[in-house]
Image 1: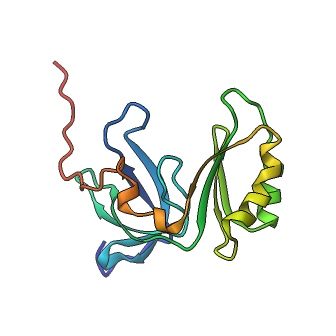
Image 2: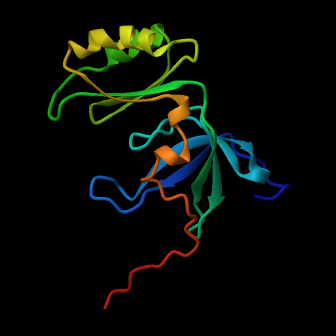
Length: 174
């Protein structure tokens, strides 16, 4: 991206994971450029796999396949990240939960396969967030994880491969 090209409002970033049985190879997150020259981007949604939250600022570089890959974490936002999920096979309507949480301090909630990943206002303490989430637990949801800003750092993401993938080797069919 040179100086003569307009900077897009949002870009897709790839989070690359180390090989593990219970993880996909990558996850895509949306981000807005903060400083394209130094490769910093503010996440617009949260990861379902690792403690990266909407609002966190990450570093990303162009990988060998032409995609932007997360290569570091610049700064965690002040928000608390929670992950709540329905038991496998449960058929719950999560929209009322998302609406209730939004009216009580949730900044951003997204759902996928019965999981709700939420960032909460920095003005809320964890005990206040628990007061909001607790009624949902009675409806069959389980509180799976919490990531405070202090926990959203490279040390707490050993499953992320922050090493830039420079070369992409295509499999050869014989």
